[in-house]
Image (spheres, rainbow, N blue to C red):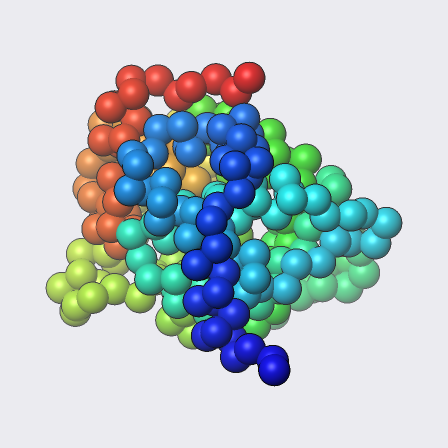
Length: 261
Ligand SMILES: [Zn+2]
């Protein structure tokens, strides 16, 4: 008898988390090493769900391993550690390429503009389509959060943004007051980044549009949380309230990022 989706998910959660996967996380995901016991337990469940519930594909000529799926799931799961798993209902397929993919041919780049310039990318999140992740970038960034770049956080943040029906840099929020605060705080920082007066912490790529701003800020929120909280406390606070987690407190608890071994 074929199991329903709900049945498959329940079955996946009931199975013990393999020790080999914990070893992988220990070695390959810096964040894993700063999580409290209950956070690890929750993340293990999210990893399990993502592995059975999403369609995983390799780009042609590439083969997916447990390491690839577990490490990418861990970072995607960390993003929604404080949220319901259902926040990823718009994620259906995750395609992994070994390295940078070069987009060719005519493409819409927004605002009615088209380009045929070759465009090297390490990730992409399509509206109602798959998430693409370049494994070499994801692997390196999982080990080195201090760089402040993480393609998995970036692309999955776009998927959270899309929950509202558009990519405008505003994920679903609880109340009208929360929306107002979000727009006020994020707009001010977005304008500062555009004007070059926002400091060095945020990648200027975030000035492209408000959707990219949210994805770029999410990367920094998780990977350089203490700096973000110090330099832009209001921006840090709106992200903390949305993601319902406090990565700066976590990082301060250990006072440094454990180096990968
Ligand atoms: Zn983006």
